[in-house]
Length: 555
Image 1: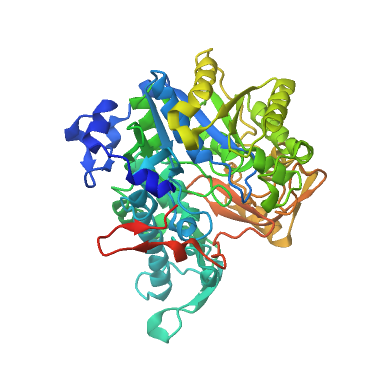
Image 2: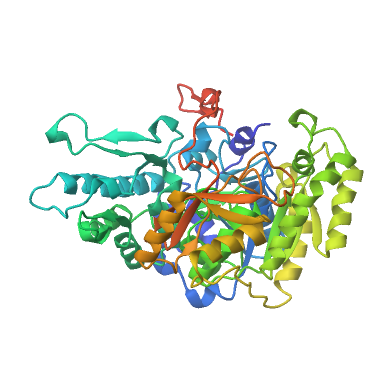
């Protein structure tokens, strides 16, 4: 059966029943129908959060074959609950770009899914729409201020860095000209669109402590300069109040359920290759308040989402995971070893051996943060005993735990071995993580630290534009911000064609965007785009709906 077929065979429990399971009274919920609800922020107890166990699920460098990180997160949650540990999975919300594009949905797969999967993968509770509206409100206010004769800040249109967003893969909108049509339609200028998952509003929502902190961060968004070189922020346009009002419901985390009837909190959705790639601080704290264990994931490979999880989210919010589960598939490692996509189901120990260095590098990276890694082999029927044994031998040589997890086919039952090892590590005592860099270090030093120690680069080059951006950052006094590198997810380098574990490569920073409200800088490397495009045959071609409103083709 397809993921959608499996999901439809599940008899969903009322969301009130799921809430009661984690100690939330019915009257505290804000229901969105029968099976979704918002959780009020005052449920969070920061004293309680420090006593719960936070487990991060990451992965090796992703491939077209897929690694199943979200599926692993959900399956591990089911397994921990089967072992008597009150556990909640905390995930990001799917973006419509991948849903209608090439990647598909983001609600897990097989018997490790969060439900209702159609709602979650489509509009859900409207959080993405609210973020998009808040972002584009600021865009409208900026252009209105340029046009205004009575309320002008004397903004220089040539310096405005704030673009618009839409939650869709639409390459035609990457670069546009606005203000055409005469004097009544504004001042013509170049701008463009990013995808909503890359919006600074998304990043801010996911790092905000509460509603007041959200408004403060929104006010700190850097817009551009006046003609006399004075920096302008969103607070100067008096935008932060209205923007926060649009986000008053979106800041509340969403409660849904897993296939096995356990709690799942889903909130925020920044991509990891162009943003910080983790769910909200608020959602994580909510889970830690209401559970003994929280399983969360960070987007793409450990070099992207997990590095940002530690260096941005954990440093900002004072979180410290007890362990990192590294999702690994034999077919992905064979791809990194040079195998063609159509041959990945054929057992091949020799080519697997060539792909093992990618796994080894990610394990080394986890250890650099002083956190215990666990290799989770996401098992497929095509995996041979010899191939599995090679992964186990690698784990033994590196002194790390390893477990086979068949979570797509068996759900929580297939994750019991992994869950047992997670409990053993989590309950062995405190083991606070070590950040990769100090936020107060020089910007180039922070970038070089990530590039050399996490990616394995030889050194970092900067374009002329990036060097100008470094000067602007210094002039604005924003050197102290964290670093959120935009980089291809397909390679440890900034070249998607360099698979496995490349060495002696150079990372090239094209430009550096300022996300002062979010609290980080975004060095953009290689050819990465903050507005993806659709493939030749997008997933939307397979999605349909019948006369009864039944959706098909979602995956």
